[in-house]
Image (cartoon, rainbow, N blue to C red):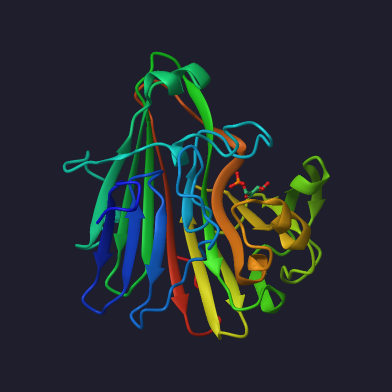
Length: 293
Ligand code: BG6
């Protein structure tokens, strides 16, 4: 299928009726539905589907930088570029076998990208829908430069929730975090779960492999399992910032929470020809459930 800019989108379905849709614009996952057809990702009704803006919502790929507030490339340029479908990507690690329903995308830098980030790379993304409806994203970054380079990465995931004041994020207790609202000052999480009563914009450091987002009202838990991504970003813009964002509804902060597997504090460094892999698996389950794997 194509969106209204004529940019291709790929839809994956599993036999049980779960589905996901990914756009070649940014390699962004725009939708993930369970077998009952319920949408699990938030997308803003005010989204601007026009370059150079990334669509507000879904899962956007932040590469090669995360943050850098105010710069036109905040959160990296990968999410604003047209990716291609790759029919025969280099083989993945055997542990990354993901069943039959997947698509492989590829981004290589254009001339203009090399002006702002002068490193040749290949960024691959496999989006897979498992037979149990889980959504799996596997990214690989390869250095095809003559010199080493460093980057940060985030799977900026906007979960759909019924009411942010009923949401808890578990698995980040006692961790240190950088607070983006306070010049990246470092704090230690004191609460036994993260709840939301005002704007939150934090990077939790060295987090466990499994983190859960509990939506009490919907009786739904999102489980995030990650590999190669030590950090977790937690973001909700709350009332004032929502009003300041042109592509976000004034009240929409109540229906979403962004919890993203990321590598931010310690950048990933690749020598020439080296490759890095970062993987997340998202599950939406009826009750509180989180097992390390
Ligand atoms: C969050 C960042 O993850 O993304 C925030 O921590 C930022 O600081 C937010 O405001 C949205 O970023 P953007 O570039 O999509 O508007």
